[in-house]
Structures are given as structure tokens and as C-alpha cells.
Image (cartoon, rainbow over the protein chains, first blue to last red):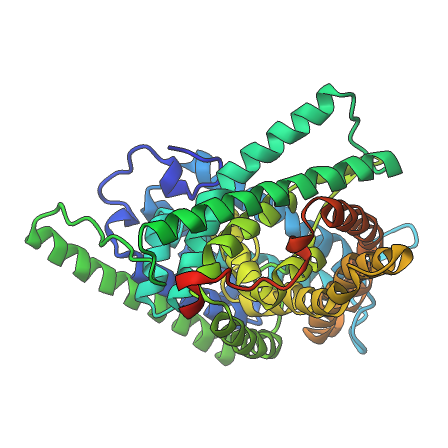
Amino acid sequence: MRTGFDTPADSARSLPYFSLRAVRPERKLAAAAVFSLCAALLSRPEPALGAVLFAALLLCCSGLPLRDTAPRLASVNAFFLPFWLLLPLSPAPAGDARTLFSLGPLAFSTAGFEAALLIWLKGNAAACALAALAGSSTLAENGRALRALRVPDKMTALLLITYANLGLMAREYVRLFQAARLRGFVPGASPAACRVYARLIGLLLIRSRQKARRVEQAMLLRGFRGCFPLLPAQRSSPPAVRLRDRRASALLFALCCLAGGALVLWDVML
Amino acid sequence: MHISEGVLSAPVLAGGAVPALLALGWSLKRLPWAHIMSTGILSAAFFTASLIHIPIGPGSVHLILNGLLGAVLGTAAFPAIAAALLLQALLFNFGGLSTLGVNLCVMAGPAVLCGMLCRPFFRAGCWVWAAAAFACGAGAVLLSALLCALALALSGDAFRSAARIIFLAHIPIMLIEGVLSMGIIGYLRKTMPELLTVARPEGGRADRF
């Protein structure tokens, strides 16, 4: 069932077999973390462009539908718009007076443009890698993968409980908001509107607390002893396929680490 | 508020990751298993509330509510915000994995600080609670914006003017959050005051976890 808060893998009805879907989620998450870290260390546009190309290749191999990944990448790029506007207009560093072009009193510096280009490339490389590697697993698989990567049990349980209740809380807020609209509420920033928003959020918190209390009591009645056991991953495929998937997982992880390392090395040598 | 991947320099990323990991470990140790469910559900409610967009003129601002989260959850706000940031990275590609530490410091540090400092005054007389509620909401956004600007400014000279503008852009959000926190805390004082006190296990078997 779709909740409105899904990874591309949650949204996709059927993914092609050759996709990254078969790779073990913990390997994919670890590979995404290593590659993101390597991309963050780059300081030249050329290796950063290489990182984008590698991440784009991963995205193509993931087999994820473009209609699910494109809006996510578009929203990531919206974050970089202020930097594209602000960095070229910032004062250039001492000794670097290169001007790309002038627009009336505004001078766009080449150094600022290069800085904007670098962070845009690095940001897109990390975002594409994350979309391909983490997006090709469902959120439940990612939660289980975090546990396999030795993230504390409390943290993974909290992540999964928060995710499980997101759709419910969003529906509750929409219901409260529509009820307010029916009573003549007009959204805005006026004092009266702020009062209504405050009551809506207050009501949402009260409903969530009441639900939490009911769930806690139900858990205690069923013998909760301070541990959330996660069901093991389904193993419907035959052992030969599982072995192939394990090899593919190790290969993908090694490939991402090698690519990240090679890009950092290239950056240092430039 | 949170910073995208690719913007920050390596020393800033490392400087954010270390205190974030220490604070997260400490707060997870303090969080009993019996409170995981209520923390998760409240965290989902805050996540939903932070998606609310308030129209202002031709644009809109979205709420952060980290001060209120700190006031309601206390130190559990650290793992709650970490879960929210991780969910935003996995679901929407916002933020990212390498910036998780810095973003956690930016969002959760001020939340816990302002929440813990202001919460004792929420049950006080008429103007004291209102001032504390405003300070909790506005102060957390102010400190978060300052930390965000500091992280940007420390990442390179090119980001200094961007950091200044990002800080100035958060001033209206700060005021709105202060006013809204006043309204929400006023409403909770009347309807469910126990939400504004330090959560303790309610007895029985849960005490042991």
C-alpha cells in the first residue's frame, strides 16, 4: 500500500530483474555512504564531473522509473538555485579579479561561478548515487540494512516507527485542515491564521500522544519486553541465485569504493 | 534549513559528525525502550507539521518546529531528529548521508538546548510561559540558522555572503515559529499539560527497559 511517503522502490510496481533491486540493501547503503563521502572531498570540477557520470551510470543501471527519480533530483537541484545566484555575485578572493560578465552594477565573478559549479556537481553526484542505491530498496529493507550495519536497534526501531506513522499523521492533519477550511479558515500569516495553525498542530500532537498511549498499552498487554524483533528478509530465491546476488553485492560495493577512491586520487593529483 | 550534499568542506563535515555521534549515542542511552513508540509517533507528528507551508505574500515558508520538539521530547529530540533527517534523505533525497552529522548538530542541538531551558517555565504565570514559549520556538530557529551560517562560512570564503543571506532569510521564520510556539504551548497547557513535562515510564514492566 502506498502511503505518500515512499522510496522509488516502494513506488515501483515491478522492477526489471537486472536492476540493483537484487543487491543486498546493506551493501548498497554502505556503498552510498562511501561514495557520498568521497564526492564531498572533491575540490576540482573535473573529478566532480566524473563522480556525476558514475552516479548517473548507477542510476541508469538501477532500473528505477524516471517518473519516480526525476522529481526527487529536481527538488535537490532547487536547493542549489540560491548558490547559483549568490556565489557568482560574492566578492572574488584577493588576487582573482576575473569577471564572467556584468549586468549593470552586478559583476558575476568566474571564481564564484566555478564554486557554484563544483558544489552543484558534487551535490548531484551524491544525490544520484543515493537515489540509485538507497532508492532501489524499500524503506523497510533500508531499516533492516541499517541494523545489519550495526546502527543501534533503538535508532532503527525509531526510524521504522516514525515511517510507519507518517501516512497516518499526514492523513490526520489533512482531515483537521479540511475541517478548518470548511469553517472558513483562510491560510496565511495573519494573527488569526497563526492561532488556527497553532491549534491544528496542537491537536495533531494530542492525537499522536493518544495513539502512542494506546499502542504502548497494547504492546505491554502482548508481553513487550523491550525489543522490537524484525522479521528476517524473505528468502524465496534458490541458493544459486542468492550466491549470485551476494557476489553482485560485493562487486557493487567494491566498484563504488574503487570509483570514489580513484576520484579522490585524481582530485589530489590535479 | 538543512544543508545539501556537496556544499560543506571535509573539516566541517568531520567537525559536525563527531559531536553529532556523541550526542546521539548519549541520548539513545537515556531513551528507554518503553518510550520508543511514543517518541516515534510524536516524531511522525512533528515531521508532518514541518511539511506545513504557511503562505506569505507571493511565496510560502515551511515550519521547522525544532524548539517545540525539544520541549516535548527533551533529549529524545536527538534520535527523533536523526530519524527525520534520515527519512528525508531516503524518501526525498533532501540533505544526504555525508551531511547528516552537521545537519543533526544544526537542527537538534538548538532544539534540545532551548527545549530544556524553556520547559520549566511553561507552567508559570501568564506572561512568563508566553515569553518562554516564544523564546523556545524563536530561539531554536535563531541558533539553528546561526549554526547553519557558521557551517557555510567555515566551508570557504565564497560562502560568506550566502551564509549571511541564509541567516537573514530565517528571521521571518524565527518570528513565525515564536508566535506559533506560543499558540501551541498555550493550547497544550489547557488541553494536555502532561505533554509539556519530562516524560517518565508510566510504571509496570516498562520501567525496567
